[in-house]
Length: 115
Image (cartoon, rainbow, N blue to C red):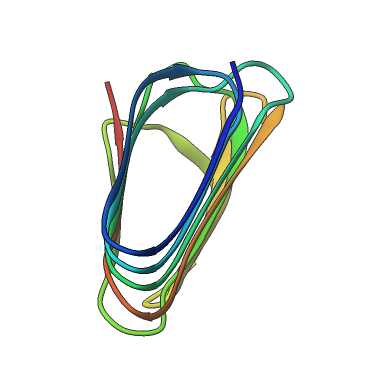
């Protein structure tokens, strides 16, 4: 099922989600364990706070991640057509059927890992 969460201050934790997911927090961390269906979307955004996303290694999506300060890291995933700078990362997972957008607007790390 799809899920959408908005929180001003505090953490958001999404576990065992099979569907599209949207999570926005002003000040706090977003942690997600999401299985994205074909043509699904994951949108996670913080003003200040980290984003930690776990997805299956066989996920098919276009990945876009941006930070202002700190780092973006990807592990256990094969990212094709990768373009990266210290504050931006984009690429394709699988055949790129879905979309994953992750953004920290002021301060925060983004970590995406395959499970």
